[in-house]
Image (cartoon, helix red, strand yellow):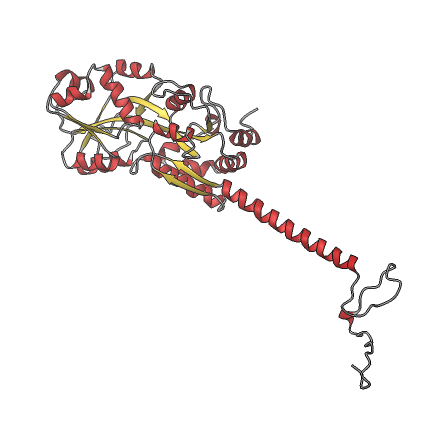
Length: 369
């Protein structure tokens, strides 16, 4: 207000920060402070809105991609090879891409396929005979697991290992069944490959669990950790395991009680081959405290494979597979069973389709046409 009480306009400030930028459209020169044209205000607001929207979309996309990398990996029994091996792979993947968040949970060779189909896990360890059987709805599965997709095959092998004390009187599997004596045998619970294969061995020798029990024996179905304890404490004489060689449970059990691993006879191996399993050997030198460690021991084997649900995002499986393919040397060091891993063996498994993300990674690596 002026001394006379009348209102007077102030001259515009001459500081550089307060001088509006002139344009051909202004025409009338600088305007009083606080009276910017409406169209300029609208332009500024539109630009701010666009920036906010872009940030929101960017952050939303980042969050969605991070969510796709939150995966559950169903492995094997705690104390078994699969559980530790999955942990090793997770460390490898995260060392290359820290945005992956993969949780390893216990599982078992047969039930893993059903959990995958039900959407209870995104990825899982599997064995080719059971992966193919689940996809086709064959024994031991009743329904087709149509969402089964292969990620990587050929990651070493697991071997059936029929373990007895070094001083055990019977020197062959056949002798144990033919004598029909009192036997205490243990393996992991139903739902895993170990127990399924053991039942097939019993079937071949025309014996049942109830036959063993009727003769005063026991069939013990517990975790690898408990099997090791039972064997070392002499509560169990036969430890039946399907593990990568060397198996940690076998190493620990034999450390406390010297062990012999019994070979499979050829007729038993052929019977198991008819059920989709493969002929193999436990290589000599695999175990320090196994007394027949100086020879190869005939048995049956199955390859290790990683599978995924078809609904897991293609980018996540692509990145996961690409990391493993680019770090083959590190993959081979995760476990001695993987030392001969060849990516050329990774891309096929019977008629089970590849996950699109894995297929993309294999094509880029020149492993798939």
